Image (tube, rainbow, N blue to C red; front, side):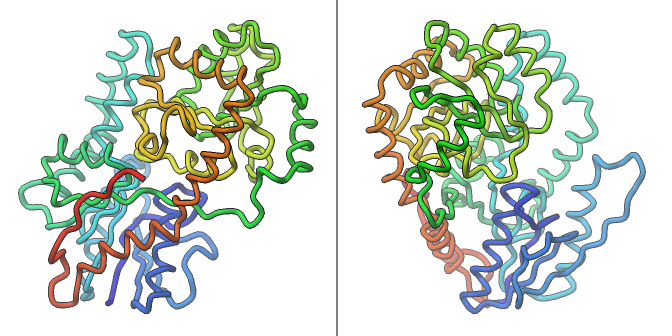
Length: 404
């Protein structure tokens, strides 16, 4: 088939969708398809040889950066209409496609869940009002009308979790038959990190973490949305009498507010703020458990990655990746980031019970073997196989996948 990918950028440094697009382009090309990528640009090496990259030009409008995504979607539609394709795959904020790979979730759900990060009701209300008058949010709604409105191009949605699939039904009225679930997949490391004792020891030595300390890892870019504030508060509650507990925070570039919060809570000496880390291999190696009390995540890729390294995982019901866990077996799923008592209780159990932690580590590592990119791509290709040259839309739509 002649297949086009419609996405603003391609590249692992730019986000999950942008990374996934490059992987899908490579797999489709390897399967013998004629693959074309329509994007503003691609990072070096992200678009494989043999795949045609079409540059979609979006000129800069000073002071109108908030309108860029809509302008790209318009420009990519015009460019795609100049050629004939058997199948068009779209990502994120585009509307001209046959299959929409919704790794970023449903935008209305992002807005609704992100409001919950404000503990104070008046701050939540103030932020909600700001969204009402935000030009960027108007642009998002305009895109959504083009995607799912009465005159929208017929398309099938691939959601990264049942959590997200339900949101497309709730917010956009899509029937179950129009949405298929394909979870995110990981690319396993060549050497399994959990057995690299030298790298583990080097990281812990550099961070002042003793051999008998328990290091809890938080890894994210958006510290606010991913729940670092409630994690710090829960960590303060649970570690008051646990000097062996340490918290490692990394992934973001702006952590001053959170460092001050740790000082206010009296836990600064037990929290390691590493900022952005280029190679997170040693960070995973040096940790004992992974904690992501997120307010919203369609299906956090870092959850199966942490499990691959043998780390028990703590996350929330607001994370689609919670569907990959067996709570109490390979980690814990808590009801909400602001349920500090519940979060503190499971952190305490992980810090106190080394035998339980070791069993969970084994279970996590074993279960993660099913979460490979190879497996997920087979599932994705199974959905795309429902298309042919004569009719670029599903002849039969697979039922949503069951939780892994």
